[in-house]
Length: 366
Image (tube, rainbow, N blue to C red; front, side, top):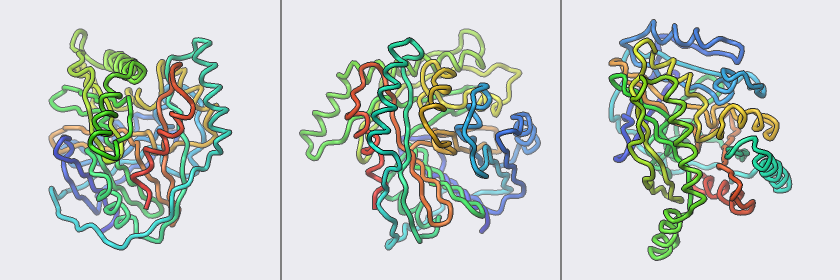
């Protein structure tokens, strides 16, 4: 079983449960490789099952913004499979251990970054930015066993496991980036987060607080507007519409609000070109996107890699379904890296934002 890829959705998502191994071809791109290579690769294998990812940095590079080095990790990686299994029953292993995830960023460094962001917003550089940092852990577990254990703790709608010779990706994402089916493109940005309560009463109170929060609503509407703009560049004129402006998603540890935006792809555009054009996702970069990505490069000292990039599949019928790779762990040998972050606006409060990032990591702790 070489180069296994596993996709797992849930009852509320439209991601298929798929297991595939032993690909017939693989493409790995560096940051310097042009996106046309990926487009030609996907076109060559139309009618096959493809799985792959585009890193955050590869998407940003296409905007003409400087990025950090990926240190040998693929900037984009796609595989072609002759066949795949649907709804394969894989047992969750019981005794899997890993260390506590600990932040690599000092709180004083987070505070400094937060203050710089507020100054940029006051200067009119952007309205909102996604500020992230990473947590580290170690494990002796095999990548596949670890993924299944993490998936058991996070029954989210867009989870993906990808294993290679010297790396593995465990993406337990609740967020769909884009789905393209019959040339209709849909995106579902998440913005707005509140913790789940310890009791039913507290749970209800927190959900009501999220729905009534003007700050969280403004954050969501800004990103919906950005994604309408992104879709406007690749969709037929007049076809882009907001289907849902504020819906609720309930996860194990947090509540989220999200929106749904849809359009019809221009007839001369291939779905993989649309995915590349939309990358990186608006919900994990900022508004306006290019300026936010420039500032992120200065604020964050290391590459994000696959974290906040996008992972997904293309079915033999051409349907494309990709997540936003949040709540995502990269495993290299025994080392685990988990990215966490959140959207910051002028109304954000430092302590709340920092605690929110740690709260998002809580369902990954052993």
